[in-house]
Each structure stands twice: as structure tokens, then as C-alpha cells.
Length: 148
View (cartoon, rainbow, N blue to C red):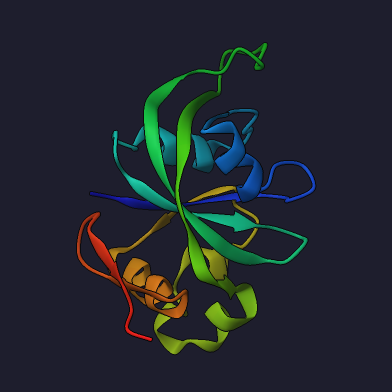
């Protein structure tokens, strides 16, 4: 199972809105690297939901609920979208500052290319961010809450 990071400004679309809506089409992405990342996604892949610009923190876990397909908002036909749904909030948001301060995340896409709207996350990065966020990560989708 692959892992991802989805970025959104909370004033435009927040994790709380994703929870309320039950899911969303992740559309209007106009970057070829982000497009290739979405094309690589499989059903059930997990990702972090990251509040950009305001807060600059991973705040929740999402799951890919529909595969890549054309984005009707793109008149050129070059770009597509996936659907995601909220899985759970992170007990503690993981800020960009905290990610940059963690040496094991020095090569994470978020740290080296924070502008990319849909990013890959390695298995090791996934585990580290989950633990920083108050979850105990395990390889794959199963996780248990970290001990208090």
C-alpha cells in the first residue's frame, strides 16, 4: 500500500469539511507531478490531509475511495482527479516546522518541495509522522493509538 499527502488551504477546503461531507473529489489539480501521483494511487491507499498556508500541518488521515479519472473542470482534458474520504484526525497536528526538525524526514517531499499539492510519502515517513501525530503506525493500513 502506498501513502500520500494531500494539501489544501483550510479556508478553501478543510479536514473538518471533508469529515462533514463524507468525502470529496480531489479535483482542480493542475500540476503534472501531482497528476502522476494521483494516477499511481490505488483504492484504499492512505494519505495525510495537510492544511497549507494557514496552520501548515498534517491534521488527519484520508483514504483513496475512487481511482484516477478525467477531471470535468479541466477543459484541456490533460488532468484528472481521485476521490478521498476522511479516516481519522491526527490527535496532534504535525507542523511543517516539526517535520523539518525531524532528521529522519529530511528527504520527505513536504520538506524538500512543500509546494506540490499531492505528494508521495514513504513507508518510513508515514510511520514517523503518525507517531509524531499521536498514532502508533504499523506497515499498511492498520494502526493503533499510541500509548498515552
